[in-house]
Image (tube, rainbow, N blue to C red):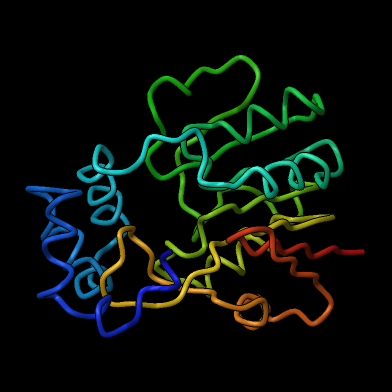
Length: 219
Protein backbone atom coordinates (compact mmCIF):
# COMPACT_ATOMS: atom_id res chain seq x y z
CA UNK A 1 0.00 0.00 0.00
CA UNK A 2 2.87 2.38 0.76
CA UNK A 3 3.85 2.62 -2.91
CA UNK A 4 0.26 3.02 -4.12
CA UNK A 5 -0.68 6.22 -2.29
CA UNK A 6 -0.01 9.19 -4.63
CA UNK A 7 2.53 11.90 -3.72
CA UNK A 8 -0.17 14.57 -3.61
CA UNK A 9 -1.43 12.86 -0.45
CA UNK A 10 1.86 11.63 1.03
CA UNK A 11 3.52 15.05 0.71
CA UNK A 12 0.59 16.97 2.24
CA UNK A 13 0.93 17.90 5.90
CA UNK A 14 -2.78 18.70 6.05
CA UNK A 15 -3.84 15.29 4.75
CA UNK A 16 -1.23 13.21 6.58
CA UNK A 17 -1.47 14.77 10.04
CA UNK A 18 -4.76 12.97 11.02
CA UNK A 19 -3.29 9.60 10.00
CA UNK A 20 -0.12 10.22 11.99
CA UNK A 21 -2.20 11.32 14.98
CA UNK A 22 -4.20 8.08 14.90
CA UNK A 23 -0.97 6.07 14.94
CA UNK A 24 1.37 8.12 17.13
CA UNK A 25 -0.75 10.57 19.17
CA UNK A 26 1.51 12.88 21.18
CA UNK A 27 4.57 11.85 19.13
CA UNK A 28 3.05 12.87 15.81
CA UNK A 29 5.14 16.02 15.41
CA UNK A 30 8.35 14.05 16.07
CA UNK A 31 7.63 11.79 13.11
CA UNK A 32 6.40 14.53 10.79
CA UNK A 33 9.38 16.81 11.33
CA UNK A 34 12.00 14.04 11.19
CA UNK A 35 13.16 14.50 7.60
CA UNK A 36 13.56 18.26 8.02
CA UNK A 37 15.45 17.99 11.33
CA UNK A 38 17.58 14.86 11.06
CA UNK A 39 20.41 16.32 9.01
CA UNK A 40 21.43 18.61 11.88
CA UNK A 41 21.53 15.71 14.35
CA UNK A 42 24.78 14.32 15.65
CA UNK A 43 25.09 10.58 16.41
CA UNK A 44 23.95 11.05 20.01
CA UNK A 45 20.95 13.11 18.89
CA UNK A 46 19.90 10.44 16.43
CA UNK A 47 20.23 7.67 19.02
CA UNK A 48 18.10 9.71 21.45
CA UNK A 49 15.48 10.30 18.75
CA UNK A 50 15.16 6.57 18.14
CA UNK A 51 14.92 5.86 21.86
CA UNK A 52 12.17 8.45 22.32
CA UNK A 53 10.13 6.94 19.49
CA UNK A 54 10.93 3.27 20.07
CA UNK A 55 7.61 2.53 21.78
CA UNK A 56 5.69 4.01 18.82
CA UNK A 57 7.08 1.47 16.36
CA UNK A 58 5.85 -2.02 15.65
CA UNK A 59 7.40 -4.57 17.99
CA UNK A 60 7.85 -7.29 15.40
CA UNK A 61 10.77 -9.66 15.78
CA UNK A 62 12.20 -8.39 12.50
CA UNK A 63 11.26 -6.04 9.65
CA UNK A 64 12.34 -8.68 7.13
CA UNK A 65 9.73 -10.60 5.21
CA UNK A 66 9.87 -14.39 5.28
CA UNK A 67 11.50 -14.67 1.85
CA UNK A 68 14.34 -12.33 2.79
CA UNK A 69 14.93 -13.97 6.15
CA UNK A 70 15.09 -17.43 4.58
CA UNK A 71 17.48 -16.21 1.88
CA UNK A 72 19.79 -14.64 4.47
CA UNK A 73 19.95 -17.91 6.41
CA UNK A 74 20.75 -19.76 3.19
CA UNK A 75 23.31 -17.21 1.92
CA UNK A 76 25.66 -16.53 4.86
CA UNK A 77 29.12 -18.04 4.37
CA UNK A 78 32.24 -18.41 6.47
CA UNK A 79 32.52 -18.63 10.21
CA UNK A 80 32.47 -14.97 11.29
CA UNK A 81 29.22 -13.09 10.67
CA UNK A 82 28.22 -9.51 11.47
CA UNK A 83 24.59 -8.37 11.70
CA UNK A 84 24.86 -4.58 11.74
CA UNK A 85 21.91 -2.67 13.25
CA UNK A 86 20.65 -5.96 14.64
CA UNK A 87 17.65 -4.50 16.47
CA UNK A 88 16.27 -7.03 18.94
CA UNK A 89 18.74 -9.65 17.78
CA UNK A 90 16.28 -11.98 16.08
CA UNK A 91 18.21 -12.47 12.82
CA UNK A 92 21.58 -12.80 14.57
CA UNK A 93 20.19 -15.48 16.87
CA UNK A 94 18.56 -17.35 13.97
CA UNK A 95 21.87 -17.41 12.10
CA UNK A 96 23.66 -18.72 15.18
CA UNK A 97 21.01 -21.41 15.74
CA UNK A 98 21.07 -22.63 12.13
CA UNK A 99 24.78 -22.44 11.34
CA UNK A 100 26.68 -22.42 14.64
CA UNK A 101 28.78 -19.56 13.21
CA UNK A 102 30.49 -16.93 15.36
CA UNK A 103 27.89 -14.13 15.14
CA UNK A 104 28.23 -10.50 16.25
CA UNK A 105 25.27 -8.12 16.42
CA UNK A 106 25.68 -4.34 16.63
CA UNK A 107 22.98 -1.75 17.21
CA UNK A 108 22.86 1.95 18.04
CA UNK A 109 20.32 1.28 20.81
CA UNK A 110 21.07 -2.20 22.06
CA UNK A 111 18.26 -3.66 24.21
CA UNK A 112 19.45 -4.45 27.72
CA UNK A 113 18.31 -8.06 27.46
CA UNK A 114 20.82 -8.75 24.68
CA UNK A 115 23.86 -7.76 26.70
CA UNK A 116 25.66 -10.81 27.99
CA UNK A 117 23.95 -13.20 25.57
CA UNK A 118 25.82 -16.55 25.80
CA UNK A 119 25.50 -17.42 22.10
CA UNK A 120 25.82 -14.13 20.18
CA UNK A 121 28.15 -11.20 20.90
CA UNK A 122 25.94 -8.10 21.03
CA UNK A 123 27.56 -4.66 21.08
CA UNK A 124 26.45 -1.04 20.86
CA UNK A 125 27.75 0.82 17.82
CA UNK A 126 26.97 2.71 14.63
CA UNK A 127 27.00 1.61 11.02
CA UNK A 128 29.02 4.71 10.07
CA UNK A 129 31.86 3.60 12.35
CA UNK A 130 32.15 -0.16 12.78
CA UNK A 131 34.80 -0.80 15.42
CA UNK A 132 36.45 -3.83 13.82
CA UNK A 133 39.52 -4.28 11.57
CA UNK A 134 39.37 -4.47 7.78
CA UNK A 135 37.97 -7.73 6.35
CA UNK A 136 37.19 -9.04 9.84
CA UNK A 137 33.91 -10.81 8.98
CA UNK A 138 33.32 -13.48 6.34
CA UNK A 139 29.73 -12.27 5.88
CA UNK A 140 28.33 -8.86 6.76
CA UNK A 141 24.55 -8.47 6.88
CA UNK A 142 22.85 -5.08 6.73
CA UNK A 143 19.08 -5.58 6.77
CA UNK A 144 16.58 -2.71 6.75
CA UNK A 145 19.30 -0.32 7.88
CA UNK A 146 20.75 1.71 4.99
CA UNK A 147 17.47 3.58 4.65
CA UNK A 148 18.15 4.99 8.14
CA UNK A 149 21.83 5.93 7.72
CA UNK A 150 22.67 9.59 8.23
CA UNK A 151 25.82 9.31 6.11
CA UNK A 152 24.92 6.76 3.45
CA UNK A 153 28.26 6.86 1.64
CA UNK A 154 30.21 6.39 4.89
CA UNK A 155 27.92 3.56 5.99
CA UNK A 156 28.40 1.67 2.72
CA UNK A 157 32.16 2.22 2.89
CA UNK A 158 32.25 0.71 6.38
CA UNK A 159 30.19 -2.32 5.33
CA UNK A 160 32.59 -3.07 2.48
CA UNK A 161 35.63 -2.43 4.65
CA UNK A 162 34.83 -5.07 7.28
CA UNK A 163 33.47 -7.69 4.83
CA UNK A 164 35.97 -10.31 3.67
CA UNK A 165 33.92 -12.67 1.51
CA UNK A 166 30.29 -11.55 1.23
CA UNK A 167 28.11 -8.51 1.86
CA UNK A 168 24.32 -8.93 2.11
CA UNK A 169 22.15 -5.82 2.08
CA UNK A 170 18.35 -5.78 2.34
CA UNK A 171 16.31 -2.59 2.01
CA UNK A 172 12.58 -1.94 1.64
CA UNK A 173 11.44 -1.25 -1.93
CA UNK A 174 9.94 2.13 -1.14
CA UNK A 175 9.36 5.45 -2.89
CA UNK A 176 10.34 8.76 -1.34
CA UNK A 177 7.69 10.92 0.27
CA UNK A 178 7.94 13.82 2.67
CA UNK A 179 5.81 12.09 5.32
CA UNK A 180 6.38 8.38 5.95
CA UNK A 181 5.36 6.23 8.89
CA UNK A 182 8.96 5.32 9.59
CA UNK A 183 12.24 7.11 10.13
CA UNK A 184 13.70 6.53 6.68
CA UNK A 185 16.14 8.97 5.08
CA UNK A 186 16.92 7.08 1.86
CA UNK A 187 14.62 5.32 -0.57
CA UNK A 188 15.22 2.50 -3.04
CA UNK A 189 12.20 1.95 -5.31
CA UNK A 190 14.12 -0.03 -7.98
CA UNK A 191 16.99 -2.54 -8.01
CA UNK A 192 19.19 -0.02 -9.83
CA UNK A 193 18.51 2.51 -7.03
CA UNK A 194 20.31 0.22 -4.62
CA UNK A 195 23.07 -0.76 -7.07
CA UNK A 196 23.76 2.91 -7.79
CA UNK A 197 24.10 3.63 -4.08
CA UNK A 198 26.37 0.61 -3.57
CA UNK A 199 28.46 1.51 -6.63
CA UNK A 200 28.86 -2.08 -7.81
CA UNK A 201 28.22 -3.48 -11.28
CA UNK A 202 28.98 -7.08 -10.31
CA UNK A 203 26.59 -7.56 -7.37
CA UNK A 204 23.16 -9.15 -7.71
CA UNK A 205 19.86 -7.58 -6.63
CA UNK A 206 16.71 -9.67 -6.28
CA UNK A 207 13.17 -8.46 -5.60
CA UNK A 208 11.70 -10.47 -2.73
CA UNK A 209 8.21 -9.24 -1.97
CA UNK A 210 8.67 -5.60 -0.95
CA UNK A 211 12.39 -6.05 -0.23
CA UNK A 212 15.46 -5.62 -2.41
CA UNK A 213 18.03 -8.32 -1.63
CA UNK A 214 21.62 -7.40 -2.58
CA UNK A 215 24.63 -9.74 -2.55
CA UNK A 216 28.21 -8.64 -3.29
CA UNK A 217 31.07 -11.15 -3.19
CA UNK A 218 34.78 -10.48 -2.82
CA UNK A 219 37.65 -12.61 -4.07
